[in-house]
Every structure is written in C-alpha cells, then in structure tokens.
Amino acid sequence: MKKLIAATFVGLAALFMGPAGTAGASELMSANVDISNQNALQRGARLFADNCMGCHSTKYERYNRVGKDIGLTEEHMEEHFIFVTDEEGEPVGVGSLMEIAMEDDYAEEAFGVVPPDLTLTARIHGEDWLYTFLKSFYRDESRPLGANNTIFSNVGMPHVLWHKQGWQELVEDEDGNERLELVESGSMSPTEYDRAVRDIVTYLSYIGEPVQLERQRIGVFVMIFLAFFTVLAYFLKKEYWKDVH
Image: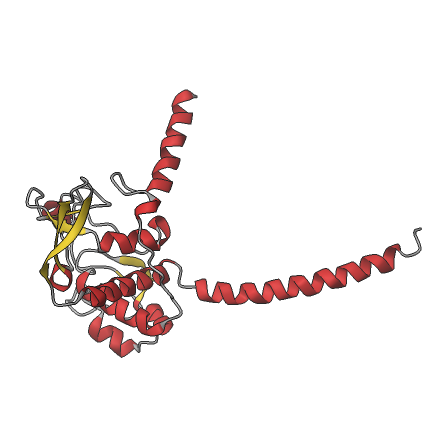
C-alpha cells in the first residue's frame, strides 16, 4: 500500500512538473498565443513542417483537417507538408495521418531515443513551457549534439532552429546568476525569432485541441441558455409555490 501511495505521488509530481530538469513556473516566459490568428497558424504550420517534422510526428491529426482549419487548400498541403510515401513510393494522400518518414530504429540509433509525437505536447507541458524551451537552447560542446537547454537539462535533441536564432551561451554575471547571451547571430533578429517561436507554439496549441475555438463558441451559447433557463426556472418555481403558503 505504501508503495502504491508513493508511486501515485511520484506520478502526480511528474505530471505537474514535466520532464526532469525543467524550470519552475516563475522562470517561464509568457507565450501570449492567439489561436484565432490564422496568419500565425499558417506561419507556425510551415515552420513546424520545415524544421520539426523530419523527426517529430503529429500522428493524431490529418493533413486535410489541419489545412481546412487553418485556411490552406489540400493542394497546398500536398505540396508543402507531405513528405511521407506509401509502399509504392508515392506521396500519401491528404487524408492520411501526419506521420514522418523516419523509422523508429534509425531514430533511436541517431538520437538514443525515438523523438516523441508532438500532437499533445502543448496540452501536456503548456504553451509558456514550449515557448521558453524553444528560446532556451545554448551551445554546449559537452553534449553529443552540441546543444543544451536551460529548462530541460541534458536535452537529447539538437537546436534545430540555430540557423534562425543563432547561438546563445550560458554566462554568469558578477552576482553568480546565470543567463543566456546571444554570441552568434542567425538569419533572424531576436524580434523575428520571438515571433517565429510564438507562431510554432500557436500551431502546436491548435493541433493539441483543434476544436477549442468551436468549444469556446458553443460555451458562450450554453452560458446564455443557462442564464435564460435560470430566470425561467425562477419564475416557474414562484408559480408552483405561490399557493403553498
């Protein structure tokens, strides 16, 4: 029984704290994403496809559903998002799940672990965590892939956006506090990179729950109905009970 209780507490801690080595909530930056911004969703989808889908799938979504939701045609999805082929070597259909071409055996050999599917990562870790994670890579030659991360210590992936952000280094100020300092510029300015990261997080937030905007819209009507029904129920109650006294 004691082991069961201990395992339960460990599981809850892992659920709320995320991966080992992550920073506390006070150290996270605010993502401020807006999934109703279709331009941001489209930019984020393209950045994700170009930089992340080589290793990370989103296999619980379909190309055509994503394209419809974010305002892209099936032809555009086929041309810019589908990199997987079928057994005959032809690109998979636009109605297929968003899987990747890399085999698990190769991924494990290359990275030591199979890169996780990212469909639900925004719901698991939160938008602020993702935003901070993508901005917190720094050069670390002691790591096999040459990079580390301040909120995910000893991360097992390279800094795939280094060519856009450039390289940061972890430096220590006079008070002994560590901070990240950009020492090598990338193709984007810090402001442009911030927007790119926010766009990716916006896309991942959408893909983790594609129906969330519809859910919120329906929720408004539900609240209006409940408010109206409450008034109706009040007067109905008064009508039923007026002769009781």
